[in-house]
Length: 218
Image (cartoon, rainbow, N blue to C red; front, side, top):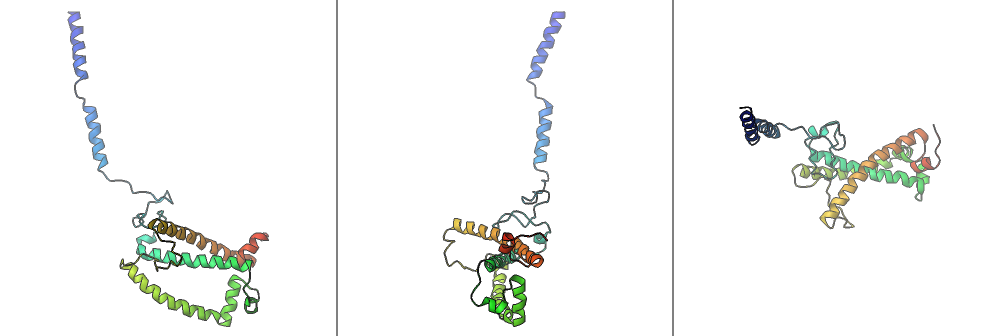
């Protein structure tokens, strides 16, 4: 009897090894439900502890999901890119001009500004009325910029695209994308750079190159 009982138990154990188990089914069901459940919002690539803004979907060149103040949730993203590119281009020109003032002087400039630089030269030119002409012509250009902006908002024009490429840098789509990325990166750097140059001049009265080559603590 004991032998028969042992053989019977062994047979049952062998059969149960091929019987379906309920545990894997329960796990697979849970996994299937979780796969269709709500997903966590993607985090920003530039600020990993903040959520990625919905409007910054990576379709624009240079988009790294950086919008800590949430401007893209308030305004049209095309308007914001147009404004960014405009400030980038102005800042690059300003940074180049600030550096150029320390490297060489154009003929006749010292007679007008007396050797003043940056904001000091600006104040002198305002008193002399020269900046009024500059304001007039820039306001004239802003009229065309506003017309172009409306076309951008209507989807007829890419933000910042004035078809200005006299050296034909954007002759191929790959080259165009590469130079667009270079422009936005250098423009962002220039905006921070010219801000530092101006504040450095406020504190020391020296231009950027002069300050770097003859630095003295405050």
